[in-house]
Image (cartoon, rainbow, N blue to C red):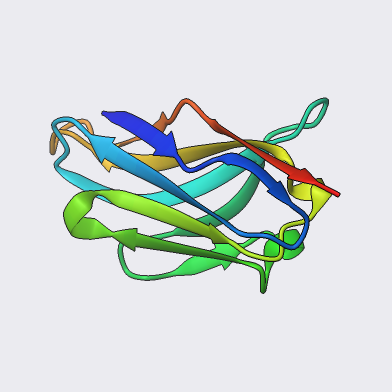
Length: 120
């Protein structure tokens, strides 16, 4: 399973960006899809997660500003980021738990990361 993330870039504080991540390969099913981020010198942290049943959850720091969504038919997860702040600057990684066979079950996969830089 390969994850390809896109949509990062440089934006001024208060602006918006939309990240996309497409999962490809021999996928049987995908349950959770999520976005993480890692700022320089900090640990990777969960930003938002969504499951196949529609459950969503967000880090407190992004609640009310970020929205995660997914298109199950396209194996794609999105992260709409509004009211961006300089502290949102980080490399954003997409993650999914996907099953390729019935026997192996779900495995966690990571994308390559996309840089988001918010200037003040």
